[in-house]
Length: 272
Image 1: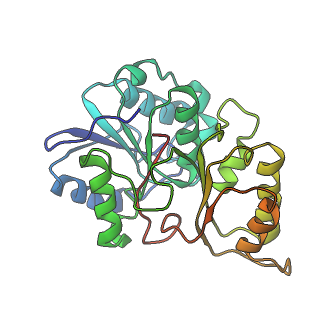
Image 2: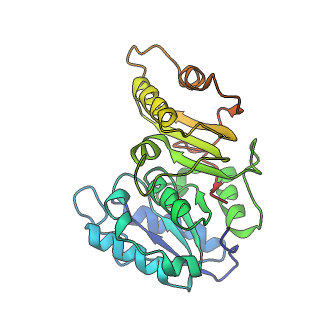
């Protein structure tokens, strides 16, 4: 199930459910959303700071809960990733969100929220650039975000785009295995991306997904950007790791999808 498309004069909110952000930068970047005709609001704690987090757990959860519950807010934009959503995800109640679905926009640590929403509500979310990076996001990626929000049936023109796609950041997907935020990949396409990870850790996590049955009955695998991968003498590329671990399966694998921790981070609808 997809949330309804946005229209001009709709109210959206920018929240910080994970890491702390630069207020000046996020406010400046929010003008891009305003230029699309959207009314931009901010949470009470969007610019709060508590160590590396954007406020205390209870405050970040409160901001997110109010946005989920408010029928006048038509989309929730996360300001950045980092870390923190796993600390608050089980405090959230999605009852009113299911009654009035809205787009949840973000990636990286927001994979926790994407996966939890897909598992517990069946509502689509948007893996896309966040408000701390619009100033470095090229027009083609910003347009993909805009089109995803304002056009019905939009999906990134990528192989298997007509299938249900789930996933996100590899480390987050791996960390949620066996939890109440774990995703079901049966009959779906799995998307994965990563940044700054050691190759042997990528190997470990891909094997972990395999052992957890995430490749069984998979429709396909979309491999996004694995930027800044560190070899550390492991000797295998990301492609070699994935091909070695999936050689007994017959699902298609597509590499270098323009989605991930890079400037040209295209919007990708997940869970539709």
